[in-house]
Image (cartoon, rainbow, N blue to C red; front, side, top):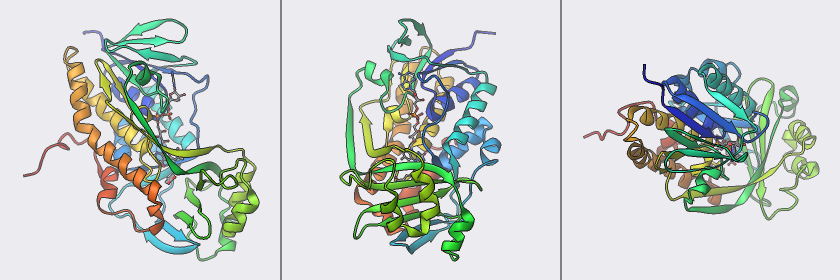
Length: 378
Ligand code: FAD
Ligand code: 3HM
């Protein structure tokens, strides 16, 4: 038996764990370096669509993931607490989960596939020839190096890949809190509190609460306000402001007020290219996007899968060329998801409701595991 090919990966986020697991399951020896001392996910909840769920199916992670996930009956949009739409999203696969649960699921899949994960290991850079460098002054050689080290990627920056960052006018503070379903039901008996509900207020003031049940006990709430609104973007949150504008959400807002939270200003980063020699960058390192369409992690997971698949098909000599071809084929759909998410964030058009049709669902319906996906139908 020839010895397996070796991959070194920077970052144990959703992208890094996915590519590591996929490569290990395809016969590679894989080592992941995580700068943090602890392996855990930051943030609160997350929505996943068909594109990433197809990958999680292939990794064998879906049963674990779905054991604690929410399939909401509808995606509801309200303006000043008046319903604008309740989209059933028929034919579109989607779930909401907590980030800690998605993370635990991916970590288990990675470990069960034989991936070695080293926490407290900071990567400082990589070379196109396949060398990865660490903050402790050591380095290692690999057939494939993956920069999955997030929006501030050291791998990307060490290669000098040009990048443009655009900031939007709004931002959000995320919380995972107990659902208080009975109290909410009492405040508004006619509401289906299992729905995903996007509560917008534009007039007289731009404030929005995204209400995303993740399971029977936990709801992800995201409080949006313009960057220029010091009171709306303050952490810990100004409880009086939020309950005055969203009185029907008081029980969950009171829970959010007990937590510190971090206000995150929406941003998009566009890089010149995703690969250089034996190095590929994936996830937020390559394409951080506004969360409007909830596809940042989705694209990270689906690009991680396609990278692992294409790299495995390539001979070792062909690898740099195969990585360039991978970018040429896979990048356009992610670029379009980034553009649309930025457009929705900048225009606040999600507030109109009835959004999930046509081009908007292109990414959600994409199947990165279909080997015929790039064939042109004539
Ligand atoms: P990260 O999660 O940033 O992981 C990078 C990892 O690399 C981290 O663990 C970090 O510690 C480590 N690291 C960094 N530097 C180094 C280094 N030098 N050496 C070693 N390790 C390093 N996406 C969705 O699909 N659905 C949603 O509903 C959704 N909602 C969102 C809501 C908000 C408000 C935001 C901000 C984002 C949202 N996203 C969503 C996007 C999603 O969170 C990200 O796209 C995704 O987490 C990116 O994963 P990643 O693994 O690329 O990066
Ligand atoms: C799931 C989700 N959807 C939209 C946003 C947003 O517009 O900020 C954030 C989310 O986590």
